[in-house]
Image 1 (cartoon, rainbow over the protein chains, first blue to last red):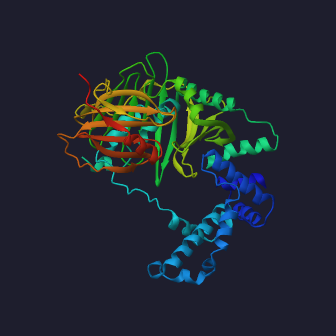
Image 2: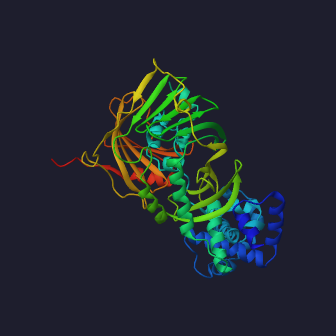
Image 3: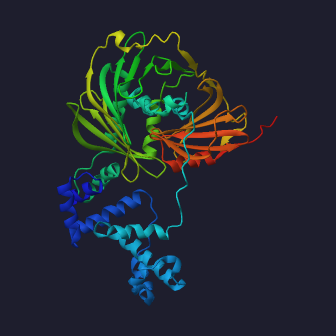
Length: 169
Length: 321
């Protein structure tokens, strides 16, 4: 099963196998332990900041002290009309969801995953259109790509392969 | 994620006390690929996939006395052909009737980097062996390069077990999304007649855009990248022309697998619109900004954040007399 979990994380399982692997993850056991351990290894390899030990438990304890968190019906309300205390409750809820999502991603509803970004302040910087002569830059760059030493001139096909090439002249 | 998964298999291998895949094996296979790329004569057809795009190209390489010649011809979409001889790369664009020419200016492996940079790879990537697989009728061995930080992509390479020829190359981001992929559909090793590597266009009346590449010392002119990106070092700096006539400075940084170019060109006399900020074209990330009346354009086969980080460090200081 461990190999299956590893393959699942790599997205290398077929539809049928994925279903079976997810089913195994539903119950506490070897598969779920492997899933957690592999994610932990992955996070540490990617140098993701680690949460301190017992972080989830401490957050849960803090939230337990806030009675408003147990009012899920309020989530239906638009945030703009919500009183300040409800906003703080929603933020707490988002925090719980984020922790829960990190730990138990496979079983979560899609909306839980969506809730997390609301508490994340950083937004992606808007993309601009590439320079009009972008292909000239790509071609000039390609001559110095280490990929040429691995693949010969094959990587050159990617430098001049967009339709902007014809459009710009 | 795929690359990561392999590293993961490596870790679980340790836990289960199974025989440990040797990192040295991965490096050895990588070296074989470099050597095969340099030594073999072959013809083949490969598919390049990037985003929604999928294009087939024919590639031919002839080695031997009189120099190595390599030719690639794109069979789908806008026709184009690239021919590389010992010291020149020519890019033929029949629709616009343009030949772009770039000549080598130093003893550096051209195009590309010196194999000495292979050693750099191990500092920036964890190199492991992947599972074998059959590609284009050949049994292939795999090598996986898992980045040690978020400044670069991961790679998985499959090489023909017999010859070391690279038959499949995949670039992935840290989430496991495929950035781009080259896959051979068929290939044959062996003698290639000379006419197979000649350009199919006479191109006599075509416009020639010679890059007029010349070695340069841009630091002396006042340009520098203050804090280089960890693992990336400067491999070359030149002046050149882009397109028809624009003179630009170019500094190239590489970590042994990926490269990022910094282009610097004067704002004066520029006719194209300048759009500062991040953009992308195909598998390349681009970042444009204005520095001291110049346009700085950073282009790289690296994550957007890395390209932006290099761009943000470009600085001009009036040189001391």
